[in-house]
Image (cartoon, rainbow, N blue to C red; front, top):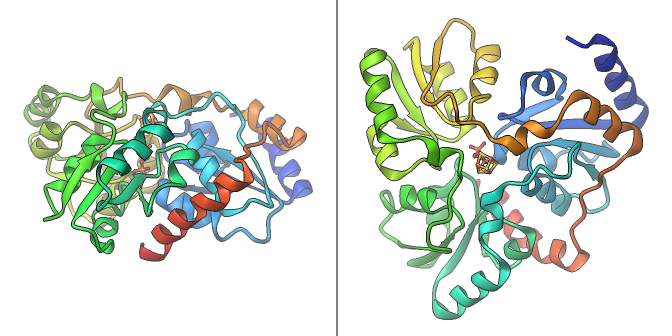
Length: 304
Ligand code: 13P
Ligand code: SF4
């Protein structure tokens, strides 16, 4: 543990009246210094409750920090490493969404929060993996354009009578795509008493073979409330770091050790210190895009 660096971060945070928000996939050193840790929905909600702060250091990927900016356009939102992008969010360019809307004028549009701000401005609402079904049911439309994650879309399709139209075809998370049905079968044999949980970004056959399909925040709640003691966790590897520090006494095994989101790991204590000190790199969304995207963000927050 790097105490002097942690002390420096603490002092800078006070001086700058800053808050550090971090996603559940952050490495342990960042989880340890975060003021708030959560899944995408919890981070959005928290970002809407920080009126008293002047500076936000967002330890997550680009779309999460952009969403915090859309909610707080007057605040300084910095991200320790600007290269921390979510490749899935970039799989749906604005033009492709506009084309799909033209082809399906009667469909409602739900975008996964893992999307770029330019696309968000054309959505009726957003969703995260924690609220996708609830948000789908909250729209009056029978047909829903849903993207960019095809697997989350299929997860919703299995639970709703509405027609889910994926946009684009095949949008995915490369990390969750690494998890295969054979991994579930192997872990069932290895840990016959464990409950196997995966994230809805996993392929649908993996989802169907697991006992529970939950967002990262949902996993934490489920395991904390469960009487079972053994769980296999099918998502990014540092989710287990969060679970171990918050729910001691459970045996947790990764469904796939190699499920690592490389860009989430770009943030380090040194970069957090520098972001606090220099108040950059800043996340900014053009004013008109931020203004238009806010409608979809607000709809999701109200419906959650
Ligand atoms: P959660 O909202 O479940 O934390 O998921 C975010 C994400 O990017 C998963 O890959
Ligand atoms: Fe994006 Fe996948 Fe990383 Fe989540 S795990 S931030 S969806 S690349």
